[in-house]
Image 1: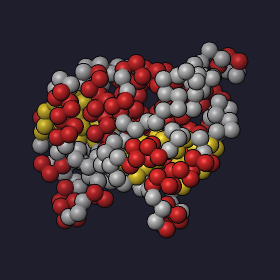
Image 2 (image 1 turned 180 degrees about the vertical axis):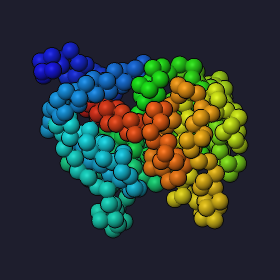
Image 3 (image 1 turned 90 degrees about the vertical axis):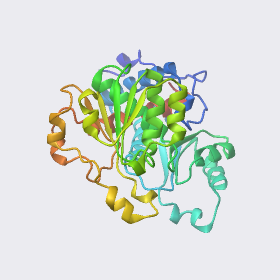
Image 4 (image 1 turned 30 degrees about the vertical axis):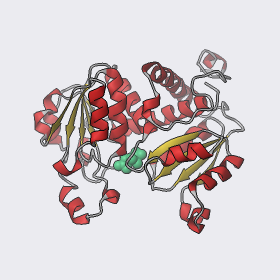
Length: 324
Ligand code: NCD
């Protein structure tokens, strides 16, 4: 495929676009047509990456990647996304080597980076930090995880994965498993799935149940959800099984963490009881919740999920910077 034959893709100057100049802070800001638009651009990005690898849509643009918490996938995929679009990146992933360790406030750090960059991707340990940064900044902020709050770009890539793997988003039974209390990815994903009439099943230890803040929102939107202590109660009807890690870093009582960390482990044997057509997902990193011998199962989507994340993050950068 030549560059000329890629001309039909929805890329180019789009300063009137829905997300141009906007912050991406929470999944609550999206409706169905927004998601269709993002996924359309993500498909175009996928085609571009597969055919030409890197292209110059964001040439001259600079992204600041500001990470106060550890990250492999989110950080690397935003970096790869910007570089595949011809832009460049200021990586601040070790804030202890930045002026943050001298006591600089988040608003001041953000005001600094926006002098050099066109967009800031922020991961922080406090709920609401991305909103605080967005208040301080003139340039767009993308929330890459705010403590136990939200992880909206992960939820977008999770939804895109479901669409690509199962071919549809409407009316699915989705089971969220593991640490539903501290896992920010499931807080965002449950909210986003409510736009598609999902039936939600929450499976967790009693101490790690989905917070009332999220379940109250789901109730208000008329979404059916049930809570379970055993996966067996729901596995046979599940279209998407979304497994999460018990979030060790959020526990004050490490003995409690140790007692819960392997409350649920997906094995080859578990998968014999799942539907023949379903998707097994995980935002990763996994630390024992899915046994490696499940990886060869065609339903194991978690490695493909990471790759879909690249296309979705490319789409978001292009849209926020007015080029898609
Ligand atoms: C998740 C996160 O940071 O919330 N990781 C990710 O971005 N893929 C999940 C986790 O750390 O368990």
